[in-house]
Image (tube, rainbow, N blue to C red; front, top):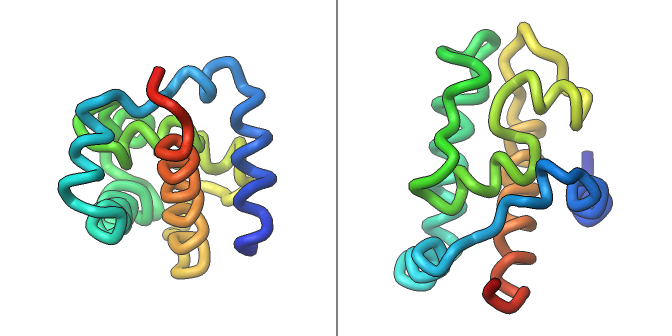
Length: 123
């Protein structure tokens, strides 16, 4: 898992009918503009560390809301919303806590998706 795999993963995920339906809305874009990408990245780290990192996360499969924060939308778009999706899409098995390298990869993927969304014209 390196930074060079981020664009490849994003391309692969964009081919999924389910994953590709997620988009940032105007409210998400305004929130990002107001807070800045560094703050959004900090939030993403907090969400991943509290909801995804544990070996058996509480409410796994239901712990990431479908709206309410740009990072949540990005987690669904990048299949980093639960340990099942992470296992299926990224090959990081369930049943053990994520390590620092894996967390960094997941957050980089989330932020890469958000940045790609910001580069696209609003729908």
